[in-house]
Length: 186
Image 1 (cartoon, helix red, strand yellow):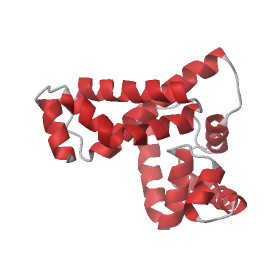
Image 2 (image 1 turned 180 degrees about the horizontal axis):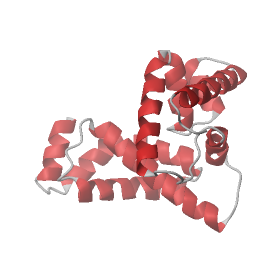
Image 3 (image 1 turned 45 degrees about the horizontal axis):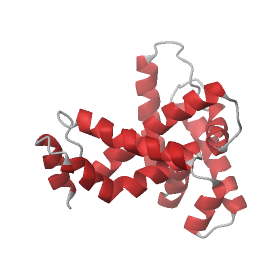
């Protein structure tokens, strides 16, 4: 079923919207959640929460594209769940490793002007990503947006795991320089 039709079902408050969205994007959302959470049951729960949250948000939201909207919902739900689980038990998993790689560059602290700082960071990150070669951008996003392992990325791009690690290290260094040039404290 086309995304436009699925969104129309959400707007009509037709419960089959959830079913159709799940048929089309359920595996995709679960994959995102699994990469973050590392547990199939938690990933399934995040997937279900994604479609419930979509039901509650559409309308008034009119997502286009639906795939990206659901991916962002699922990612945020999974990260919130990961934070909650991490607070209960400290464990070093794939998600923590990927987030730690960026922690030296992009701090999660709420110092300074807060909201204005977050907007400036968002704009600087978008500019940076646009400047990257397509493959480097995809590798960067696979690691730091979808939180995929180095092995998964290497397999997808037909590269050695070490090549992916070096590409990401160089890209993080470029990001750091870009943010400093933009006047964003790193």
